[in-house]
Each structure stands twice: as C-alpha cells, then as structure tokens.
Length: 401
Image (cartoon, rainbow, N blue to C red; front, side, top):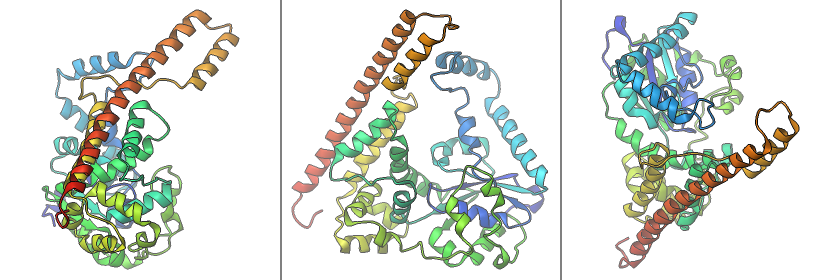
C-alpha cells in the first residue's frame, strides 16, 4: 500500500495488465468511486512514446518525419514537453467530470514500462496478474487466437515472422508475445516503487475487500463497494475499446477462475507451459494450476525451451523497433497493387502515367521480397535454436527433465 498525501495525489494511475487478464473489470469497479475516473483504454503513453514514428505510407516520408522531429526535439527537454502534453490531456479529462484521479488502463503498456518510469516516476501503478492458462483460454475463446503447437517450433516462428511481413496474423503473434514477453516484464515490475499488486482470482472472489484495499492505497477514502453495479456501462458502450463481455455481466463471480481447465486441451496447456515456463508459473503463485496441467499430461520441458521462445520474440520485437539496424517496410499486397493500378489507369486526373505506376509496383514488390528474406532468416535461426533446445531436452537422462 502506498503512503501519499491526499492533498497531493497524482492525476493519473497506471493500471498494468495483459490483454484478457481482467483489467476492464478492475478499472470499471474502481470507477465506481466518486473520485476516480477510468476511461476505456487511452493508449496515450504508447502514442507519445512512438511520437515521430509514422506509417511508411505517410506522404511526407517516414524517415524524414522521424529524423526531423528527433533533431528538433533533441534540442529541448523532450521529456518535459511530453509530460506537459500528457498532464494537459489527463487534466482536461478529469476536469470535465470533476474527479481527482484518472486510471489509465491500456493493454500492452508492458512494452513502454521504462517510458512510464521516465515520464511519471511518482505516479502510482496497479499491476493485475492472472493465471496464464486462463488468459490463454480467454484469448482462444474471445479472439480466436490459436495456441500453436509448441512441439513444432517452425509454426510459432512462422507466426512471429508474419509481423515482419505485415500479414493478417500479427494480432495472433502479438497475443502470444503478451504471454512470452509481457508476463515476465510485469512480474518483475511488481516490486517497483508506488506499485500495488492485484490478483485476478482474489479480485473476483472478494471484490469488495480488494477494491477497498486498492482505493485506500491510492489515497482515497474507502466506500461501500457492495453497491457498485456492473450495469452502469454506458461509457464502455460508447467506446470501441475495452472488454465487451463486461456489458453482459450484472455481478462479479469467480466462474472464470477454473474455466480454462475444460476450455484448453492438453496440447494447448502444453503450449502455455512452454511459452510461460514452469518457473514463472510457480513464482506467480500458480503452482497448483501447473500441477493440474501436469496431471493431465503436460510435461515441464525446462527453462531452456521457454528462454528460446523469449529470444525468438525479442529478436522480432528488436527488428520492428529498428534495433537490428534494418528497416521495416510493409509492402502492399498484390491484390491491392492490381486494384490501385486499375484505378490509376481509369482516373485521367492523375498526374502520373502507367509507366510510373509500374515502377512503383516493382519497387513495392522488391521491398516485399527483401522483407520476406529477412523474416525467413529470423524464423530459420530461431527455429534452429528451438529445435536444438528440444533435442538437448530429449537427450537428458530420464528423471532429469
């Protein structure tokens, strides 16, 4: 619990948790307090952290925009300017409704934890943890995310490579990255200053007690949370963000705690165990759930396999962020190019002719081939590492796995 002067509360509190971990429910319950506002997923810190990096189709040119803004902002206090913008945005949001603290609940803030620390070192954080098996089951049932067989490394390597290529499956790879990279990042963040930890299973079992504890930790006077209705969801209905399932709920219950045991097959439980790792499951307090999975037939393949997956996703993330020295440029699909060509030839007002359009098509195709080579190289190297780890595991004497 954080000790703070109630007269000097920060305007914002960051609620950190993986997608499908219950952050919408927790934010909604906190919003029932008269001094707390929890708008649906601002995503503001992600946008500010990426300021200057624009889509490759920007007419001014991606590299020019990034280079110019970096040069300009490099001559001033960029952190101070960014903080001033965020304060103004949060402040106006709070002033409009007359509340004191804004809960910024945004999925994937785990990707910008250092940025949060830099911009808002004094702001309180709430870290929500949930059983990884249950998160995976929710990803499967809600978003249709397939839990690819961890026994076949090329399958997941190919899925990650899709991010580089801009294929229609990056959401799948991103969801897997939440488990592989996001979960350990948030687990390590639990001990940070000004941080409260909430366990989803405790929240849904004892919601009144847990919300009162969190509210007190934020420095607000407690209130009777038993009267906090889940039915008041108008602000969620008007937004495109947030968990839509909460719109159907009238009360908080713990039926979701064990649902994963019937929603996941043994192979899917094995995938989650491989991606997350038995060590982290135990560290987070889910040893009993791990034992259930093992009794069902899941095998602990050791930390080497989990670390191989983490390296795979880290390599892909580094490539996307430009840390490998390469450039990332998603090309237009063949269908889009053909459609564009037909429209261009039919539109006589265009200032360029078919020959220039064909040159652009060839350039796009060459870039797509270049991205494909890079992605395939990443996938091949990481698949080799995963296969080697699996072979090493299989070679261990019985009883040493």
